[in-house]
Image 1 (cartoon, chains in turn green, purple):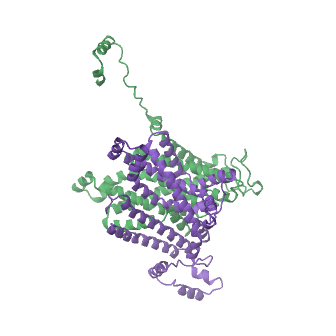
Image 2 (tube, each protein chain N blue to C red):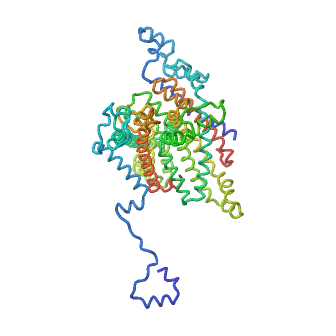
Image 3 (cartoon, rainbow over the protein chains, first blue to last red):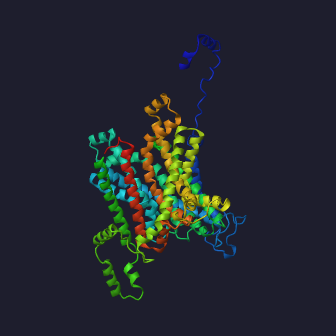
Length: 309
Length: 313
């Protein structure tokens, strides 16, 4: 009862008089929030970002159910119609329904974003772990990574795409290669600082073999920064994909992607700006949501990193 | 100091070697046989073989790499498959617009982003701070060409304040030149501003907690002089680092921005080269951009020692 000490004797006696009545609240009750609503209340950024991403995923997976028509169906008679009740987002220069193309386009962006995030994380984690533990490999691997990092990532992805034909798979590979050096650097930094931790010394002293140390003590501690990083990779991969498609070095024109739709609307954008506008809005909102998710995850999972940036 | 500079310069050599090896391999593994292209449709296999030998394409990988590096050191970047012009000449013709765009963007971004970050840090937690942070997340999320189209639509098509597209050389006067560069520079700068503002805020927040800031306040220094003289100077190193690293964003973004605003620069050259599979040009541009990026960051690393005499390696 720390609060009682500040009360004067008169108050105390007054309180005794009213002993039967409960004491007034000194602090308002802390309302414990559990479950989904509690989580949303405590982490609004994760909730909003994650919610929008979830919505986009549902939209992409169940694209045919969202009142879409065939996104590749040509209709030369109905070219470049303005947005209307029949064509919500209008039609493009080949008469295709822009609304359907935008909804289906979510598939490419999300597949590329998620795949690159997963692939780059796994490859970067492996390279980072190896160079954090194997001394002789470290200097060689890190020089190679430094070299690759000095090629601007978008330029690197563009150059790689020039070697192959445009396909979703090749776009994923090219962006992954461009993202891996940064992830490796991050993981290596985390590994090097973890190696200095007393519990790793203790494990070494207890005779634990290196693979077990990596599996038990190092890897679990890289999960949090890696998850945060993977979200940001996902966002940047989506932007890179749209840039590649926009300049004509990405997904083939037959597959609608947000970058593709904008590339096709480019020639007409001064007279028919809506063809560029709708995919641009969807792309921006999705990337914004993924970035919000990443910011929220960083604040929750890795408060030290949150303080730094 | 001198030893540090020498060591730092030497450290960039392996980095540049990796870049060169990568860029060379690009052409080496590129599909299509340049000898067959040059020989034409009517050539016999013997003709193709002869041209291949005359181009030195029959030599082993490392020998070709060595010869290629030697050519580059002499300023010879090869010949475009498409136009038959030397790549170095094509780059030289396209250099001015890109350089102009980059310099204008850099000046614009730094002069907007740094004060933004400083003010956000000074008023941490307030509406101003939240606005700056929201702007930063938005800047990261909206792709450069989306910003470009939006700006062009509002300020060029609707309001007609600025030209929609194109580029005017600097030699035709400052105002026609800058008029064409404002919109592309703002579009290209959006991510860059977000990045710099965020780092400035973080770096300033850390510095503002230091004892010497309290001392400065105690002796009665004004808020402005504390922020911009005492604090910003000490917060400069991470900010300048990010300005250097962020140039990679500018280079990548320039490729797209030039397409949106029809600026005949290196970015357009890159896009055209990709679509035509003109590998020598792609090689030349990637090499030029990467080496510029490495050299700028080398310069920044060396400048550190001037900003912060405590840094000694």
